[in-house]
Each structure stands twice: as C-alpha cells, then as structure tokens.
Length: 146
Image 1 (tube, rainbow, N blue to C red):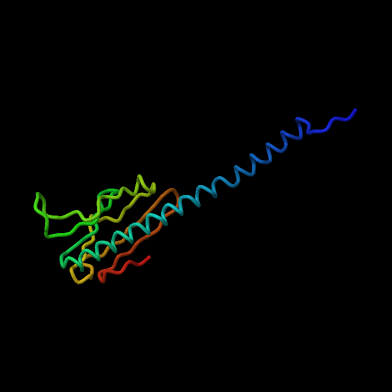
Image 2 (image 1 turned 90 degrees about the vertical axis):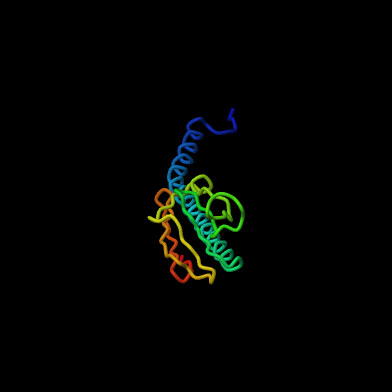
C-alpha cells in the first residue's frame, strides 16, 4: 500500500534550501534598512534646517540648527521669552541615534541663519549607519545641497 505525503529527507532538503536563500538575502535586506534609515534621517535634518530658516525670517532674528552629539534642535536668539540662558529652543532635541540608529558627524556644533534667511555658517553633515552613509551640505546662502 502506498502512502501519500513527503518523506523526512524531502522535508529536510526543502528546509535547507529555504535556509540558504535566507542567508543570501539577509545581508542585502539589512543594507536596504540601513539606507532607508539614513535617507529618513537626512530628510528630517533638512526639515529641521528649514524650520530654522522659517523661524529666522518670520521672527526677524537669528536662528540656528544645533548639533549636540546625535541630538539636533532648532534655536533662536536673542531670547524673546523670559528666563535663563541666551537662546529660545524652538524645536525640542531630536535624537537621531534613537530614532534612526544614525550617527551624525561634521566637526561643528551649530549652523546659524540670519533674519534674511541667508546662512551665516556653512556645514557638511555626514550621516552614517552600518556601511551606509550620506551627506548634507548647507552652504552660506542657506541652501541645503543633498
């Protein structure tokens, strides 16, 4: 009498083939996730700089994008609100390491924008995660070059 179904050997061969396909695809999948995280962080950084330009032109004061390690926030000066310190924090710090797993580097701590919307500083910010990296360039005219 013949039984219907698969033998143990056939099942093991299928499991091994699926495992090999997974081992081949996993590094590419991780690289795609890294590229996606860097791209998202780059978009967020660009949006934060845009917020600094908006604050500078609408409030007629100097604003800036400050990098403190992997934290980035938007500030304005001189201070319009009463309290300690010399700056107003406009956008609360965004931790890029926690949110995107991305490391920021650039060798500076802030990029300022004049009340005219033109940049007072220029910067090159490098975003990295794993083997994926991208650069945001902010020129003295206040343009963000991607």
